[in-house]
Length: 390
Image (cartoon, rainbow, N blue to C red; front, top):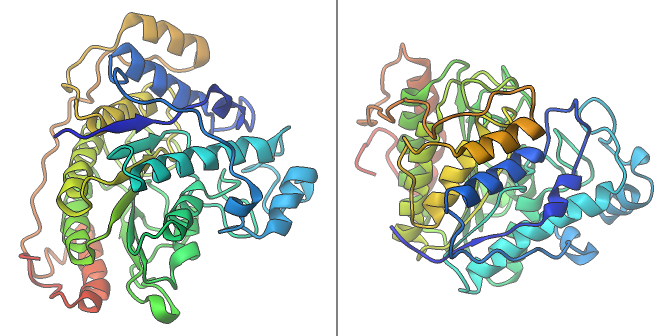
């Protein structure tokens, strides 16, 4: 499947830096960019540099008192401080540049310059209106979606496959029926930020605007893919958004130290392909993607995000593609504590049993999670939660 694609990048993204001992290191995005380049994935893709988001853009989502404090005296900004968000020089500038990257991607897609656009440094989905949270200073995704609405979009769908609940994006739009946020994550009963239950469905006039699939710890490829396909495609077909925005954090991976899911890069690539197909089926190809979480800096994040970019470019990589030795040497220099991968696969076939309606297996915690989401959401869209034909 083809489509014109854009890769938004600036080497200054690495200035978003909480320190070498912090799990959130943007060198992972740099390594993903360089691996994609080594494999020819970026050939022919437009690669614009972003413009930092100004106060007008940031103010679409964030309290400007928080913005001004983060710019002028960040140690006093709400949510800034160790261990999650220790202050560093130029916090505001680094975060505003990432927001600008996601806005650049979204505007290019909305204005028809390209079909698909990606900002790997983005995906900072925990930041709230007036505070930093979970390694996230500004919420680039929420700002980009709010800007799409300002540009005239009537309906935007947001799909988040990070292991952690996309709470900041949900909070920004859970009373706005023009935006539907769908988050597939490890249950908040076991993992930060402690939210994302299936009963969180939106508020005020936005019932149905928030959709949450809260998976049990230990969910692997088969359960993760079963849950994704049981919820995301039928709901997107019911919503019919004009633009698809996706957060593609990799911390659902089985090696990730900050979550408890057991997903492979191969299953992630299957989800990227499904999102690509849905964008063309429903949104006339309009698809904006970002990175997100992911804390295995050399082995996992670069492979997963390179496969994402390859999918967006319409040139998906063979899973058994070998990783160039030149890139492996670069990875060792940046991340000496990890052995870089040799191939682009985890050797895990992306297989699952499709949802066949009903409530699934009541003894299977994944099926219980799927059924809880469908029961909470499907009637709000005139769908039967027991019907597999939706």
